[in-house]
Image (cartoon, rainbow, N blue to C red):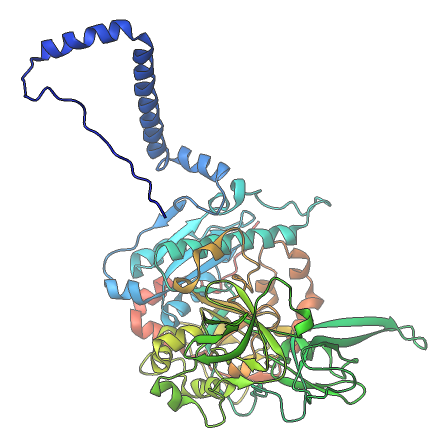
Length: 635
């Protein structure tokens, strides 16, 4: 191939150097200026354009740090590249750089939450440990958390930002929703605000090089999911029992009809997925890799949603089906060869070594880099039970897969990679090692994350723990039992159990139950691609698609952490001035939730306050927790 060359020749020279005076130089230019009016015009225009660019840039810098600039930016910029925070509370310098660096972060959207905020911040300051916080104030809020947050900043060095709606909503937001307007859907309005805030908050923490970020509400508290032998739900299976077919990439649906005798509605739950695990000759006309819809299951739809993956379900004909944990296999799609798109290349004679898939495409050898690998670290292998499949597994049916190059491939034959995820046995082993709140060594959520990731080895841990850790919620009801024989006050001297939901309420719902509803998350922003943070979040429960579970909440029995969700008193439950006011003021709705949340009891979280007071000192703790649980009347 010929290379095109560009030759640059110097200007002709007289062969000797000469000195010239400024006057002589100017005189030499005068004929040019007189005779080349067009050139002069071009020169003047160029200078003018350069001056105009400089002036615009100077104005931009001035506006960037003035109230007017903030208003203009919030009016015309979206959350994709948000401006500096509307108000930053800078803490003192008493805390070490290590404390700030090693702490965790959180995003909170608040609405009349001043009675709850002191307890929430103090608890998470002690247990996470929380060191950076962004608080967005709902426009409908009748109270401001500024003074409260100022105390935390000045006394504890907590890094806090307070955002108004214009800071994260496109075009500055729409203000408070008018519930009296029949054309306004205030719940939708609230969720849209929540989605934009969560995404903008995560992006801001990522720009500041923060790692783990907690996404919960102010009535929710993350804690260690301590194992209790007497009330733990079943552990999900990693693979189907012998002789039971597997359904993968499955979805469930409800089919309703009226009972001809009673006229009442009857719901039937069905599951549709891709078959595998059948005999080579097939079964009832179906073969591996083909779609299958079950007959109606004998289980309720709640059981399917809250405890489905890793379980075996039975239909009305007696057929049994194993529902795979698709999130663990999210990079592999079971597919029959006839369903493969024409533009997707097929890999034959495949085998895996390390994290590389070897095979042939149209007779040529290929090597596809994947993020799936077999654990090779001795520490990892020591954690695995003999029954844990760490080798490349084999099942019937081909698979679609995606390499690190972003391209999709169809893997022929019966090969399936074993993706990087913790087995149920490994997860249970971690749960058994968890500390308890109030231990003398004061271990935190961050301590557990660091120690378990170190035990697994950095590379394998990055694929198996996070970056989006989805946590099941457990609803704590309003039943009080100070007269119960097992009741013991956990409030230090000068404090009252009744002022703190985490001390006052012990009874809760059954795990993996519908009343607990959806998951909450803690996300390592250092491992989330920047492109995933554009626009608005999917929702508060699945803030980042692909990395967070979508179909189902995580199974309680294999989750390291859980989120305690407190119903509290009816006074507290109906206190907010938010979009869900209809439900918030519904006493019968509140009572129904309470009846679902009085099934089990524990004291797991209650010792935290003593540890906090011992850590910061009694006098400072009294100042920081002032107003906790005091629901003053708001007009």
